[in-house]
Image (cartoon, rainbow, N blue to C red; front, side, top):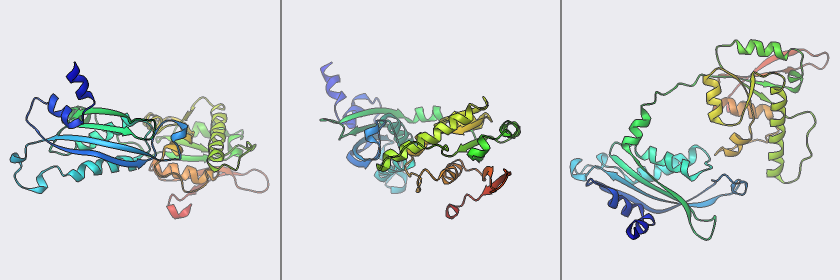
Amino acid sequence: MTNEIRLAFEHPEERAEASSMTAYDRISLRDHPVEVEIGAFQQERGTTQRVCFNIVVEVLPAHKVGDDVDRILSYDKVTEAIAFELAAERFNLLETLAERVAARILQEPQAVRTFVRIEKLDRGPGALGVEIVRSANDLARGSLVEAVVMPQPSVIYLTNAAINSENLICWLDALSEQTSPCVLCVGLPEKLPALTHHVLVARRIELLAIEQNAWMLASRDNRCMVIETKTELDWVMKNNKISVWAPSKMVLDATQAPPFPVSDTVALASWLAQMLKAEELQVLGDFTTGEQDFSIRTLSLEADAL
């Protein structure tokens, strides 16, 4: 028991050696610090913290691949796996990040098993972390799940005039008959909440106000599902449902936040459309100065069009 407790706090290399029943070679990355925004708590948003990586990869013995640098697992592949996953999205959980890093390392043909330990260094008096062990067999079992090609959705921005129109139900009837999924986006409500001079707080209030408008739209028709996460969006699109986007989580979790104020809600809808690889963004609303004349405008999704 004492030996098991000691090993629990040893470097992953010692743990790998103690648990391996096969004579694999090992490469290791020790005490690799990265400063990144990560965490599920509000105080962890909008700021970076130090995260330390310790990784061991069990690989095929070197004598089986010869003295050929192109046939061995480079140390750079390990650090590149970390950098790639951190750039791909903002993570709330170390556990999720560890899974993604391990899976990317195990895609290398030489990798057999990997130990990934990740620790936050600034959240308390000690290091707070997680360690996982994954094998190439684990990855192979996961890869048996058939990849699903996501359909290209229609992204439609509804102005407040369109939301309150007596024709809304008719439009939703038409959208529900489309063969492609539909994602609806809305803007700020007509009556805005009071904002503060604190930029991050004001941004959060505006996002919540957009979501309030999304729920108001959903209350008009039960077919409209308010969704918050990319996972929910994927499910809705695969099942060809009508969804209404609540932007807070995806905007706040993005590694590259929208480069404009969230009050520019048409640009925000375009940002989502580009993320979902939609072919176009349509805006439905009243574009006249006299009597209401509802029409659809199709906007370009080119970055320089925003």
